Amino acid sequence: MAAPAEPADPPGFQRPPAMLRLKRKRPRRSEPSTPAASAAPAPLGRSAPARRNPSSTPNNPFCSPNNPFCSPNNPSSSPNNPFSSPNNPFSSPNNPSSSPNNPFSSPNHAAQRAATPQPPAPAGGDPSAAPFWQFLEPACEEKPPGRAEPAAGADILALTKDLHLPTAVPKVPSSPRQDFPADWSIKTRILFMSSQPFTWTEHLKAQEEAQGLAQHCRATETTLPPSVQDPQLSTELRCAFQQSLVYWLHPSLPWLPLFPRIGADRKIAGKACPWAQDEALQQVLRSDWCVSFSSLYRLLKAGLCPYFYVCCPQFSVLFRAAGLGGSAVPTAAIAPTTRGFREALRSEGIEFSLPFLEERARRQKGSEGSLGTDGPGGLRGGSSAEDEGEPALSDDDDDEESFSWLEEMGVQDEVKKPDAISIQLRKEKQEVRVDHRPESLALVRGCDTLTLLNLLINCRSLVAVAGPQAGLPPTLLSPVAFRGGTLHTLKARSGRARVPGGSEDAFSLEVLGPVLPHALRALTRLLGPAQRGAFRALLSTHQPSAAFNACPGPLQEDEGSHQDLPACGLPPKTLDQLRQCPTLGKSAIRFLEMKDYAYTWKA
Image (cartoon, rainbow, N blue to C red; front, top):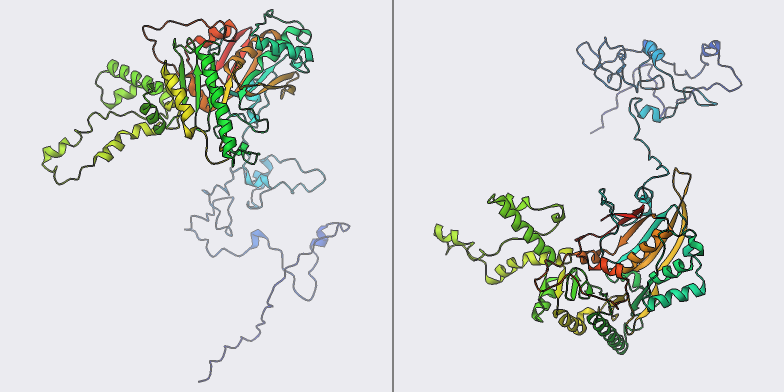
């Protein structure tokens, strides 16, 4: 069967080429653009496309009198624009975007173009060559204000926002006082800022350095005047500064960062660890560590060491002597803990308390008694901002009676009850929820601290068995010398930074390392006279140690206010501060300011 023939083209029809090319003749720069040139006839041959006039274009087939998108009464619309209407915000005469430079606007706005303010023409170019952002941003829309430069007296918090410091400072500072509360957390970095230079902390002479170390070993207290006129020439000030930077550490491995230990795998990874595959070397390190740990505890019991820290890869322990931290007996605070570790404490017969949970229970009980029987809302009435994020406490006394309603309905035999293991897991749910949180802090008091010492010495899980910290004993930090301890000093360097937008320079002093509580007190005591009673400090806290600021609870009847620690190696004023009951809770001091010899702080 023959294929159907294609229809023949009509007479006079000419097929167009496969590709149409549109060329526009542009006038040369040397040729002036005159009306005569623009009215010249098109060249012969291929007909050039005629330039259309908007007013003489054929009618839009989609435009009709009933079409709401094309109204003849709209001055900004034309019959050729199907998108032009009085309600169209892009073609309204009141729209700022429909400017003379807008190529999408109608050419019938002569009066409105005259009233519209013209933007300045670009230098050396065509006035119509306006930037493209003018077509995208309406003239009435304001850009967001830029970042204002701080003034000369701007707050140090605003000046250090770009330093990426891990600090979250509240907005409400404390009232000015002569001293700040005791902070038992360990600081990893302190940045002091002042209008006076810190050059007196640089380039200590050999005699000044030796004198500072001797003063530390002999626990000599330096008395300074309220204001030092020339700190650079004050030998007593420079020696006391060297004395305030000293701390004792075990073990001492110069090529390894031994603090902090929690989350330090990345810093230790790749370092030389010859004991990782040598069990004999691990045993030597552990036995040496046990000797140092026992030496520190004996000094603590004798009142010769005020406190010391045990930093493990999983948790940290703070041992405090009797009379410190609001307790008349020795205490040991452990944070963070897990349910397994707390079960190990119970199995060894060690009595401990959970201060944060007990304090919240007392607060809830007091609010329940004051509010009366208000249902579930009564318990929430006593909660505060500190309770946000804490695991809720539930009463498990009626767990056995929770299925009594089944007997009343007579379906107790048809419904499968949970077994004893499920009930036990449900009871332990609330306890497990506090694991690895500040609320899991466990406080051991009195003679149980000795049992805790034996548990830590004999605990095999105290040392990591795998990973970069495998076989490495915990870190011991102390303010005084002990057996096997190595003397170390904090790193301090001073500098100068110009305040943005100000004419005066701001001087800085940066202290790096494990800054213990007594060192913070010693540094602020020296900077007051040296900086004329005005400085500010930003403190970076080792976050797991912030839980050590928990209050140990109400004092017992047989406990006194404090005990004397005359030979513990700390100045009397520092001891008075450390004797106070901690008041910071789960937080720590992150901003400290001295003005006119009075302290304000934020936690």
